Length: 218
Image 1 (cartoon, one colour):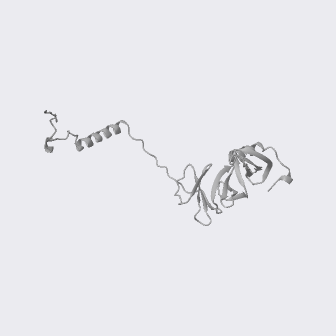
Image 2 (tube, one colour):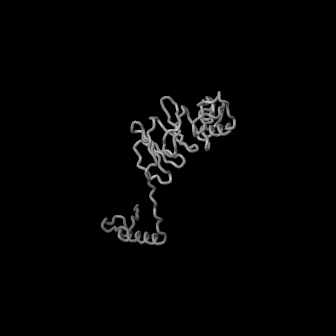
Image 3 (tube, one colour):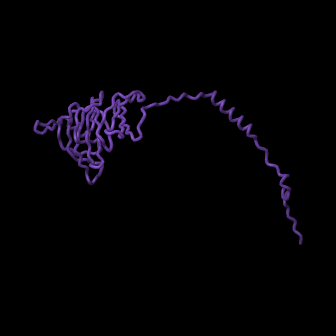
């Protein structure tokens, strides 16, 4: 019995006879791309980009924002330096530059006319707050605890964190602090939630409860 198998017209044809399908040349593709860019550029011109400049930062610098100031702490020198720039024009010269004690880290807030610079000791887990003049950076007063800004007032808190809710509920003594002098004006126990924000609320709520001279602390 004979079997006839259709192989098709291309089957067995020499390779040189197979021609690739026609393709658009590279020159025409480039020309089409250029034409499209010209049309798009003419329809909607690109908006100019405004470069945002700032101070030159040291390799291990800490950058902090505090009210009208952009602060740069350079930990490399001994002692470290703190430079304050105008946050509205950070590419200008610093308003002032001062030295600060060595620390594992820093944070900053503005309370009234002073800058509250908190220095953190990682090994001891302690915090110290130095109030500095916003105009000159010179120290005004210093307290061996964390001091929070509460509007134009300041609140110092001796923190004891709850074991049942770590990092949330804080129990301790709240000291209402005069931001101009660092003198304690209000003392009272407090339990609150929310870290810095909770401390500020607790201090503001107790601002009207003043204490007698015996309970005051310099």
